[in-house]
Length: 472
Image (cartoon, rainbow, N blue to C red; front, side, top):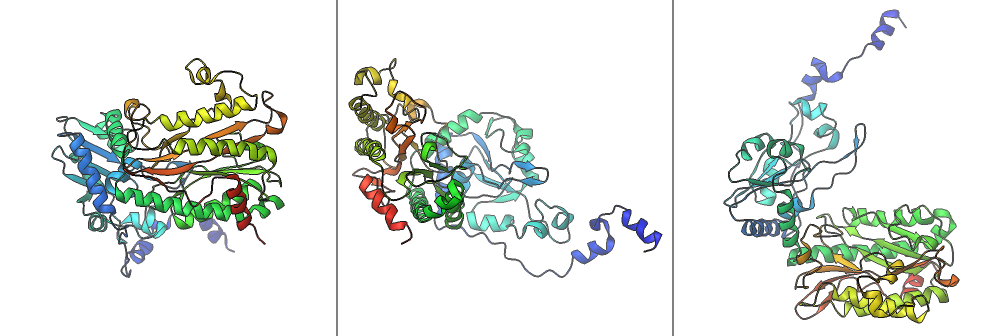
């Protein structure tokens, strides 16, 4: 090889600067399908959500952003997941987009327009260019799908200009919006949105039903892979099994799955999922599929690896099941939000007293200066579900924990007992056992809809369910 050729190879150059490349890349591209396919009813549901927000904040200007994917390292990002309030108001999941609602309630969506082959971003932008990431819907595509006016993101500054009336924004989500508006009214806006989202409409409830149905299927997948987990795959194998179904049936897992075998069961947020699975263990699986519209289930069952509980495991599970039944009986319109949690705690406390674990009265344990039973159940026993696994957390306490249940609320109800392996206050045979049952329910005027009823909650039922999924 000649010295001139070697020297040429040492030079740094970029193909995108080459005139020949730029002339070639800009021509002879056929049509591309950039249409947006949305579930039936999504656009109408989002429009109604915007109407509710405008009615709750009359005359206010509002800007809500989708956000951007966080950087994982260097030029690689985590998978993008749009801001939940933004999705509730738009049904759109386009990264970097911003919804602006005027004081009159008129809404406009601002997005990045797709770069064509004649533009440098088409081939030179590895993060957003179509040559790198594939076809991306444009303004007209989104507008046709959502029945919502869409404008280029470059026009956002003029859309949010002015201080009268003050604009409410979701600060900290979109840098462009933060630069133009700042953090005006973020807490108030998030609070109002959370309180509106407590009551699910029919379309939202259908999304939750879909999420739960996929989750139930994924739980069965996990049970069928228990022998492989015992052979060496461990908790990681079971987590991957759930994730595969979640990604196929929906957007993916709705939160970091808890796959806790054996002594990991009492660890409330065991998300490392890197332990072994052994015969004789129970698996505490807390996981939920997130639909492609981003509504998520939140389900927990604790089932035996071999299809049969040990006497100690059965003892604890039976008590948690009794608490679950008592809790579900209290979920109805007009009941205090805390009522179902109180009933579950009452049952658990009485059981712990019967076992000689608690030596205080029920009244003392439930009193503000007691709470001794919390050693074995530190967490809360329920929460709202929806677009977020712990939905509506920005709501005021008086509209959440201190409020009454109402028709259209969707909840997770999840009593449990958690006996750590080194807890010397409990009998040795119970140490290392963690049991949780978590159902997803919807409050109706005349009934309680248990979305997770396809998964058994009794010890006998879960033993039979597990055996039915094990390879024969």
